[in-house]
Image 1 (cartoon, one colour):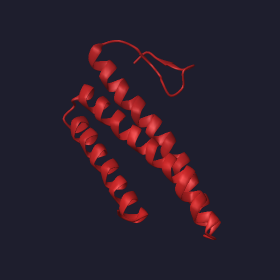
Image 2: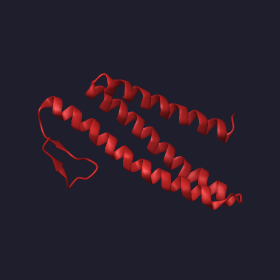
Image 3: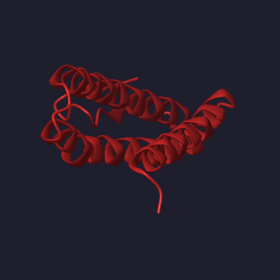
Image 4: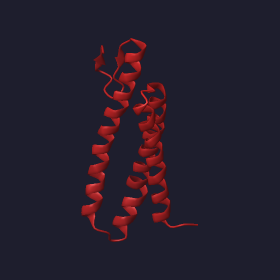
Length: 115
């Protein structure tokens, strides 16, 4: 059994690998594949954030670790979550443009796009 560092490092790499697949599909303008690959990446990132926020950060603080870095990482998770929402919508919008139909903005259900 490995250490928490080994586990989190492997999880970071898995997220990076999923993002690379989405990026390759987007560069190839394969928007249906980019949308699927990005959804897998986003799911991995959300799970990773949850593990850190619910398990790792509380354990660090309980062990007497400094609160400052944990606060910064929580703030970064919030920023990245917003970016992930924007990226998901951009992927979706590209796919919808190819289908010549309007898309519904899933990150903000009250907003609609006609592009």
